Length: 100
Image (cartoon, rainbow, N blue to C red; front, side):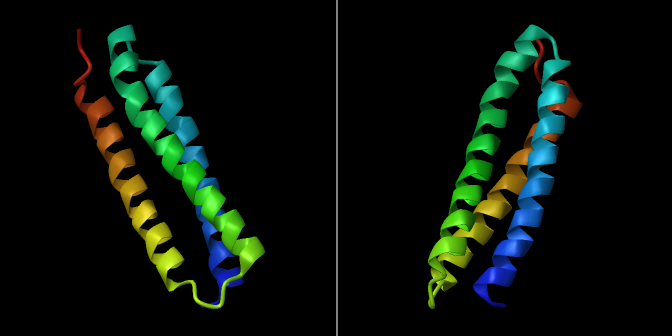
């Protein structure tokens, strides 16, 4: 897979993750105050990871390195981390672990 195809696929995934984060923020907004306080760091972590991925995709798109295996691995690892953190946040909300 070349860099341009990879970046195009990542852009599509980033759009999906941004929508998921928007949905997560809506769920957090519906929590009681104590729940919001406890969930915001999780949401911020996710937001920072998505911004990092977006920056990396932009860099790959403009730089088009001939050797990009390391960058690809780092991005793939970041995506995996986002998936885990997102699921953890959903599980946390669903289990009601935010009481006072």
